[in-house]
Amino acid sequence: MTRLRRPIYLERDRLSQFPNSHIVLLRPSMCFMLAQTPDPLTLKDALPDFSRTTHIFLPINDCRNVEIAEGGSHWSLLLVSVVDGKAFHYDSLSPSNYDDALKTANKMSILLGRRLDFVNMEDSPQQQNSSDCGVYVCLQMKHLLLKRLLVANTKEMVTMSLGNKDVDANKGRKKMLKIIDEFRREGEKRRS
Image (tube, rainbow, N blue to C red):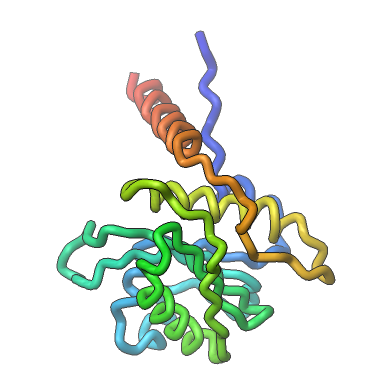
């Protein structure tokens, strides 16, 4: 009998190992709600408490129709560095989501009660097709979180550039499929 290995989640498994990190991974539905709400302060009770947060990761989607649950055609990543007052935007089909990310950064600025300088990361790795944007967001988020923010000394400056980062979307997609399959098998095992 093969024992299934439980998949590792960034938020639950990796980020929880750093209780003093104060990093928030905002879910796509919350990011969409934030982007579509005229006054972001009305969402304060629905969102995490950002008072001690140092960084916020926000997946950005270009959907503008609140009546379509799975709308939009492109994803990008916005990383808000609250401590630096900057919002870094990573778009693998640049400049596709520039306006959506800028709008969300402005709303985060209102929520945080402080100015955020918007930095469109021109050196973001670019996808070679029209279907890898979600994989790019996941891989970039993982890299920035695990290889940059969580390993940095609090006094050192961390580069947010991904200019020399090679993104292997095929490998990332296979890993995601493997995780999904592990969950499927775990569920089947529990039901039997």
